[in-house]
Amino acid sequence: MSTQIITILDNERNVPIEATIRDDLTPDQLIEAENEWRPARAELMRRFKEKGIDQSDWPQHWHWNWENKASYLSMLACNTFGIFIEGKWQGMLMATTVGHQSRLDPDKGKPLVYCEFIECAPWNLQAILMKLGENARFRGIGPRLFEAAVYLSLDQGFHGRLGLHSLPQSQTFYRGLGMTDLGPDPKLNYFEMTRTQASAFQKGGG
Image (cartoon, rainbow, N blue to C red):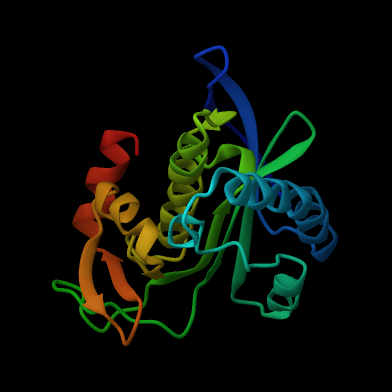
């Protein structure tokens, strides 16, 4: 496992701080993250119910379980990244490097990195916490994880090409990163990033 230093915004103090992003996570680390996040999800759900927030506004990924996703790590083509701050996992992304091809020119039919799952810790979900009148603990977790996927694509010789299927609540996020929305496929919208979009994303710093 390798570790790199990145910059994340400490939202409480409104200052950038150093964080670590790690790759090739182990099943134990995914289980550790799930054990940290599960009670935080449950507490947010309790507060949503207490405040009478409509269930359609609840996070659509709250049924995910990273402990169950640990079985993916047995695949050689699977890469998982995690951001670690203050002794806790702040976000994770799981991607695969085989089995998916670009649908967009100029590289249509060529391989890309497919993002299977991306999730921030419950205390970092700005759009969700705003419904409770609160702010996320850290900002920039999602873009930094996405940046790691772009670098994985570059390392694989895929020129930054990425693909993923987005939950409806996340579509605005992926459009903001510069990805192309190709519409329902068959239910969730499929998004793709071309080599040109990847280059623009890198120059813009995410």
